[in-house]
Length: 119
Image 1 (cartoon, one colour):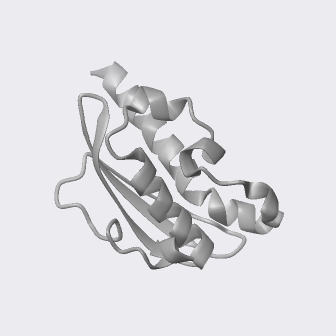
Image 2 (cartoon, one colour):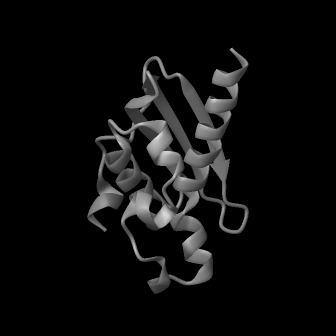
C-alpha cells in the first residue's frame, strides 16, 4: 500500500530514450513508462498511471528495483524477480494488474535491443 502513494517516480522524464504505454483491457488501467538509458544501463525511469493501487504500487516498485541495472540482466528476470513479489496471493485478474509494468518493460527492452541491433 505504501508504494501506491510513492511519487518519486510518478512524473515525466524530460529527455527519455524510450517511452511506451500499455492498457489492461479487463479493468482499464493505463500505464506509461519512460526510460533514460546509457551504455545499456537504466539511468532514470518514471511512470504515469491511471488505475488501481496494485498496478500503481507495482510500477513504483519496478522503478525502484531496476534503476542502475543493465538491460541484459533485466531481460533475464521474471516479473516475480523484478518486483520481488509473490503473485500467488492475488486473484488472476489482480495478477494482471500487478504485472502490467513488467510486461511493458519487457516490450520496451525488446524493442530497444532490436533498435540497437539495427544501428
